[in-house]
Length: 207
Length: 111
Image (tube, rainbow over all chains, first blue to last red; front, side, top):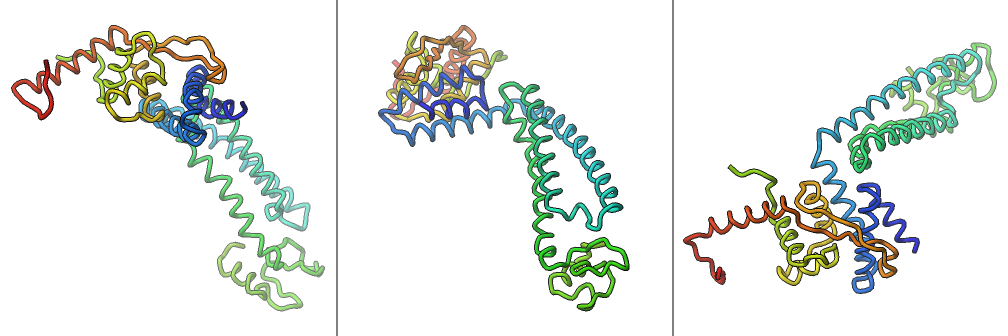
């Protein structure tokens, strides 16, 4: 039965495979009398209890493993930031549009961040057998914030790009439609002609 | 001076249930024994982490049985109280007895 494998996989995240299998077997044995809802509640409550036990029984070790993960994550983030800076400056010199305002660049950055997080998770899982999920959960604030801020930044820029208010890098002689330079007057008036662009300029986001 | 692991109230209940069941003590029967003798139903979220904790403390040991089709082909894990667990439960129960000496609780009668 497929659900048994799923249940075993869930428990396998917080305990070893043998224990997970025997616990699932116990719950399967009682399922005809108690029902499928009881089975799944049992799996989730057992997983939650074992997860908490992983944290509570050895908080120092779990925190130490999590801190190793955070340290690796910071180093990886610095490398990614260096790469972003390189792409930004090379792109800014050779193209009219700043690369950081491209949605694809944001998606690529989020993808790289996710890959790094998965790799760090694997390292943690190997260094804390039986407490993999606990260690990763302690590291979660770090894991959660970084992709979020990239996504938020993408959404923050989206309406501005649609309104043509995103600053474009262009030369003083660039008169193509939609190419407005920061601070430069255009045919339609000043750079903050649209309400969204005005908000953008007043927020200081373009400085 | 007390040496060895201290036991929580539910850990004592689980240990006593395992002692009562003898060789047939695994998750399902331990839960049923606790319901039968205490009237309270331990959820899987309480029972299995407690069994794990008792094993880590060295109070119980476990062995795997044969897989059965009624259990989706999963083996039973049989538990047994070992010497350390027996000493711990004896010590805990002696403490209760000492605390009760000279006191009478309604409905409680040690024969």
